Image (cartoon, rainbow, N blue to C red; front, top):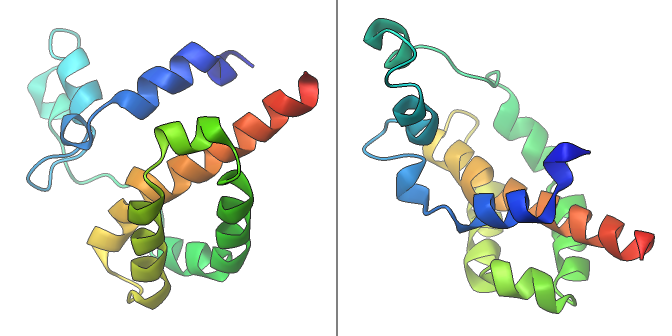
Length: 130
């Protein structure tokens, strides 16, 4: 699993959110990396989205399970070193009451909730291997 390399995960978790999304424009890191590789017409397009209109509803349907897992992950010192638990709790609260087409809440999911969830799963798998 090359994407499960601890160094890669640490790097990704350390990237400030404003390097990923700023002023409503997402994918900033990849846009800058492709600056000399792709024409601006392609690199700067903003009309493509990776998730469907029911994305937030699907996350909300699994929110209890995600919340229980986050509580379990919170026992890990490593998890707490990388994740602001207070911020994550506020994000879970916002996601739970958001309307279906709330783009800011979708970005809350993608920017903090799901990366923290996946980090917790990775740490549990790493502990199981040891």
